[in-house]
Image (tube, rainbow, N blue to C red):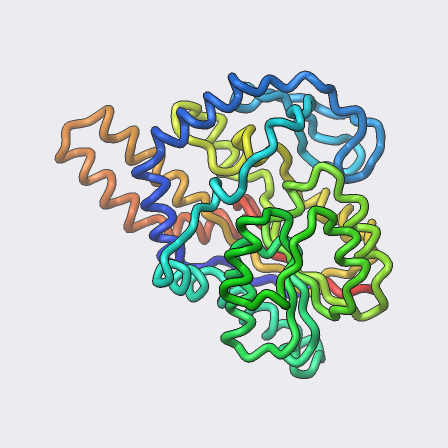
Length: 336
């Protein structure tokens, strides 16, 4: 399996700036959500492997989690009530046309370029001529990247009607299916390449989707990205006074590990061919340390801290990535 490391943090500069300036607001919103929606339904079975849930327990941001002893997946011990479902159209608010184009260029076009490059190296001729399907296409950023790259056949599946409407506006109504049943939609799809970026961790019952992927013919491609337990999660636990981006107890209540990613691939019968290891841990550290420095030190000293943190963040992130301690994994796999 080929492994690539790191990506410049300037590619997420607008999002990092937003997290810095809205940190207090996000923290208050996360705390208010947890107070308003106490989780009382004990989770009986592991979200990923389906076995009776047992393993090491820990508390993070007032929420109790279990690290599954069988597959290694991290998940909440007590489930939120159905009424507490996150509104992802609010979590991911609308962007202007210029902001949308910027996000496609900075975040999603590089994902597509990586997938296409690695598929070609693995012997798949002209990947953009294949049929693509994005599971959880959100507002259509990756679909737009496919369109701009000249892909001929592609479709997105999105559960949130507001996000699906945004995706339709950039990809076309005939290219977006609004459905809460991703498993059924994928089972009916004839795509050859499936992609899913930071979606699997939101599924409280991924079995139908995993079964649909399992049933696909040999040679089917599945490229996905998931959050993993790493430095960012550790920072969130050490500095609870700041907003959490990874395991926030609100929109994110489960998390992968390298072990649970391996279990997932074995479960669906796909062999990993490439992985891209990069995260935003250094951006999270910079956000928290900048706020902390402003509280602790005079303006001049705090400013020198901020300058140093900004200058070292890419080198710090590379070290975190190369030690497999970053907050995300991008994986490219092929059906055996």
